[in-house]
Length: 490
Ligand SMILES: Nc1ncnc2c1ncn2[C@@H]1O[C@H](COP(=O)(O)OP(=O)(O)OP(=O)(O)O)[C@@H](O)[C@H]1O
Ligand SMILES: C[C@H](O)[C@H](O)[C@@H](O)C(=O)CO
Ligand SMILES: [Mg+2]
Image (tube, rainbow, N blue to C red):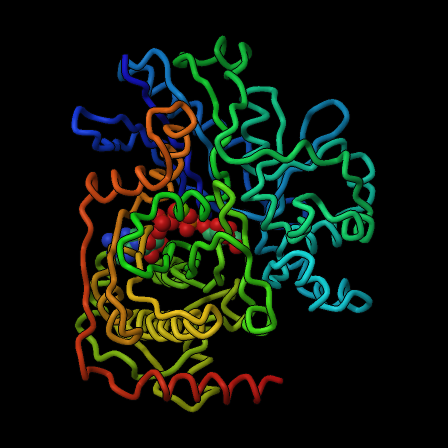
C-alpha cells in the first residue's frame, strides 16, 4: 500500500494541512485538507500566538484526513522561525509564546552587543542581525519564567512534543536563534551564558528527516485520527520552502515570497565573510547539510496590513489586478525600513514616508499597491545584484515560490529589473518541501535532487523573462535613493 503524507505548514498569516501521495508516474499529488488563519494578539502585556488553537486546528485537520478514508499517514510540521515556548518541569507550557513582532526586543541588539562585537557574533553564527532573533528574545525574557523553564522549544518542536510526547530541537529552525556555533554545530556556550540559559534547557539537536514518534494515545482517544507517524522535517518553514523549490536554472537563487520575502541561494558551505556581514546576509541551516544564504525582506506582510487597513474589502488577487492598472515606480520606498515592521496603520505609514521624502503620495488602493509591488521588485533586484557580488557569481534564474509567486505583475517586474529569468511556483512549496523530506526519510524518494525533478514535473511553473530596455536606469536611481536614506538616518 502506498504511503500517504501530511504536511502541517503554519506561516505567520495562515496554516494548512496538505495531503500528498505519489502517483504511478512518480508525480506528487497535493490536496489541501484544512486551512486556518494564524496571527498574534495582545495578551498579558505582549503580542502572543495562540498555540493551543493551532494544535486544535491540526487535530481538526487530521480528523478530516481520517474522514476522507486514510487509516495511516506520515506527518511533518513546519512553522515560522525564531519564536519558542517555555516548558516547565511538569511538561506543560509556562505561557503562550510571544510573537517576534512584539516590541520587547527593540533595543536588544544594541544592549547585548555593547560588550560583544557584532562581527565577532557574526563570525560565530553567520546569522543576520534581526532584533527578534531568539537570542535577543531570551535576553529580554522574563527571568523568573526562564528560571522555571525545563525546556525551551521552538514552535514546531513544541507542537511535535505536544502531539507525540517526544522533544527534539531541529537544526534548520535552531539556526534562526543566532545561538548555534557554525564551526561546532552546537549551541554556543558563551552565548548561552550571556542570556542565562543552560544547554540542558534545549532538547537534543536533530537533522531534518529524523523520525519523532507516533501521536500519543491521549489524542487518539480524544479525536478520530488516522494512525500517524511524525517525522521531524525541515521545521523552519523557509527551510521547507527551499527544499520544495524546483531549482530551475543553471545558476538559480530562491525567493520564498509570503509574509516575509526570503531571497537567497542554497550553499554547501556557509558564507560569513565581511561582505556578507556588511550586507546582513544570513546562513540559516538547511536540510541535508546545506546552508540557506539569504536575507529577510519585509515582504507581503505589507500587503497583508494594507488589506486589513482597507477593511478587508478586497482579496489579494483583486488588489494585484488593481495595481496592474497603475503606473509603477512613482515613488521610492525602503521597504526594509523598521517602521514597516508593525505600524499602527500601514497605509498611513506608507503615505507619511512618501510625504517625509518629498515624493508623490499614493492615495487610492491601486496607487498604494503598485507602490508596494514596485518597491518590492526594486528591492529584490538590488539584492540579486548583491548576491552576485558577495558570492562572486552570475545568477541566471530566480525561483519564486510561496503565495507571492501568484503575482504575475511582481514576477515580471522582478525579472526585468534584476535581468534574470523568473520561474514562479509552486505556491505551496513549503508544504511540498515538508512532504519531500518525509518521502526521502521513508525511502519513497531517493534524494533531494530526484525530489526537485519530481516537483518540476508535478506542478505548473510560470516563466518570465526580462523585458529588455524597459525601466532602464530605474534600479540605479533606487540604489542612489537607498544610499541617500541610509546617510540621512545614520
Ligand atoms: N492570487 C494572489 N494575488 C496576490 N497576492 C497573493 C495571491 N495569493 C497569495 N498572495 C500573497 O501571498 C501571501 C501569502 O503567502 P503564503 O501563503 O506563502 O504565506 P503564509 O504561508 O500564509 O505565511 P508565511 O509567509 O508566514 O509562511 C498573501 O499575504 C498575499 O499577499
Ligand atoms: C521571523 C523569521 O525571520 C520568519 O519566520 C521567516 O524566517 C519566515 O520563516 C517567514 O515565513
Ligand atoms: Mg508559508
